[in-house]
Amino acid sequence: MEYLEITLETREGGGTSRLRLEGLEYAEVKERVREHLDYIFRSERFVSIKVAARGEEMEVEREFRKLSRRVAIEKVLDFLGYVYGVREPVMEEFPPAEENWLGRYDIERMSQKEKLLLLLRHNHAGEWVRSQEIQEEYEILFGERIKLSSLSTYLARFYESGILERRGSRAQWEYRLSEAARLNA
Image 1 (spheres, rainbow, N blue to C red):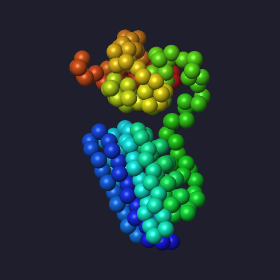
Image 2 (cartoon, rainbow, N blue to C red):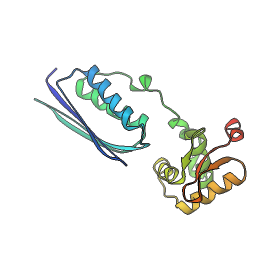
Image 3 (cartoon, one colour):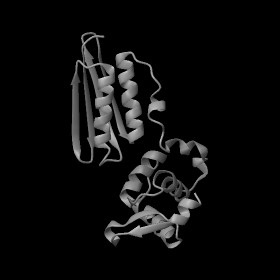
Image 4 (cartoon, rainbow, N blue to C red):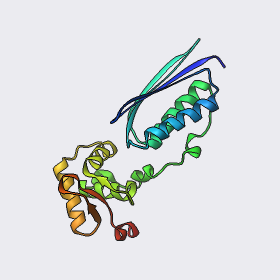
């Protein structure tokens, strides 16, 4: 194996982070990259990533935008596997969270309200989330825009019907699925 320099740059809400590794074996690079991504995703839901490898006979660079933790790890490890010539099943080591649930539904025939409820049930069953976070995730996941006012109306109606719990103030409401809604999901 030739000497490689691996650079991982992540751009997130809090700024930019860079990890530069030189002359390390695949297993060590993989572990360091995974630790770095785990650290970044402690405070971020989605990040954009630029990863590059440079060596005597190689220069490869890839850029990915707005990735969730699982997808980010999968894409970066796939890149590293390619660069180091290692073929291993990425998905076995990092099982999918709940991102493959989308394929079980006929999304094209669903309303925004139905899609929003699916998103809440599958990706945020027991956690508190703000409408702005849900808006960004909705638009990435479904590939369509949703007005914050429409989203807020749906969330308020879900709260009024007992599907969601709510806390905070009007300016910063946080929502999560109610116990009953989690049991019936």
